[in-house]
Image (cartoon, rainbow, N blue to C red; front, side, top):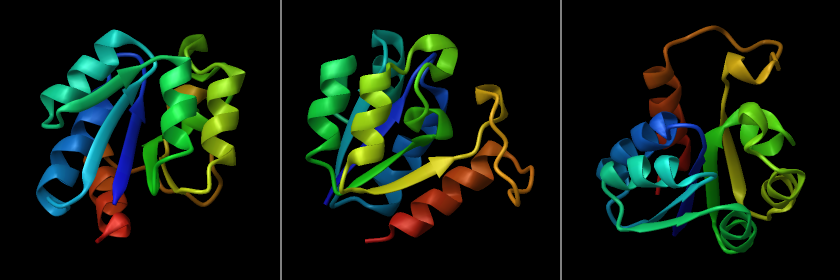
Length: 132
């Protein structure tokens, strides 16, 4: 199973996901895809040896992943202070992969019915839902 972990900014959410997935899904191929080099590097410090950066990396890997996981902004054009290009958002949203989104309030989007919880709780829930 190929799991694409996508993040931007500093890559903190993605790194948390990589760390948990590495333990919970040791047989999975984890691919860290960042919108910038700092995000990719931080995710790779979480324990994956595969990483790529930028718009083309998002487009390429979105079409090849079985699962895509990251903050909700990865499907919103211009989210993360403009780091998510419209092509990135379209590639993720159009992927045939299973997409798991972590709710974040910084994207100026609120998902009705979602309770406010700690990031670590959402990361654990996402990892459980991926379950191999």
